[in-house]
Length: 257
Image 1 (cartoon, rainbow, N blue to C red):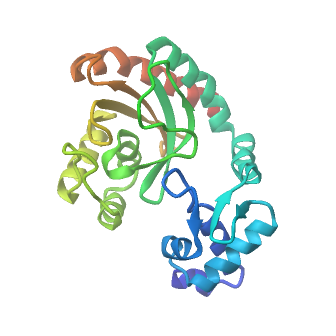
Image 2 (tube, helix red, strand yellow):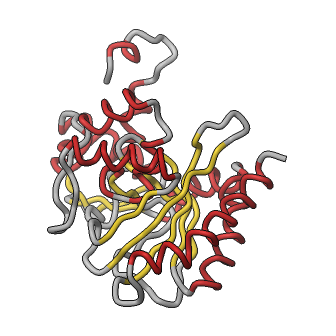
């Protein structure tokens, strides 16, 4: 916990710990022990245990005495966000139409710490092996969505955030050094879109464009992904970038009329 939060009388540290515990579960961590949760959330085992047992009593988690896992009640948190914010609901039909027209998967993401988190998504008939869904997180340094969102930050802020990220090569094609990542982020600022070719998953390329608010600030990014075997990068850009931009512009009009 940072010092500014520690000095804020309105900051409830126990609530932060509980939310950190709840959000440490995922595809790679579906069933966790107390010690695993403590490691993932950077708290003591005793603190992790108290949070886990509290969430279990409230019906968000269940356990067998050794491991804990999430229950459907946890979906209430995500549903509250999706139903109360206009962006996901307005974006969904546009993503569905884009996906249906291209037969590819389309997503809308926002920046969360060092990741791009997907807030709306339409999965095409051609399913990619990443298995992404709403709430999935993609590392910002090597995803098209993430690079667009980083490009929306002031350059100094983007550079500081990239340096603070845990950056690892997910595939042999992953760009993860700070200078190269920042170079691609700057290219996105200049060109208005970002691309990715096999950096997250071998055989998959993607492209993303920024969504701006009335003040011109980047608030989200919209992307589309395609298998490498279907078309080359130039063909992918020429065929799908105009459609992606139209969908983005329509969403901006509906959000900020």
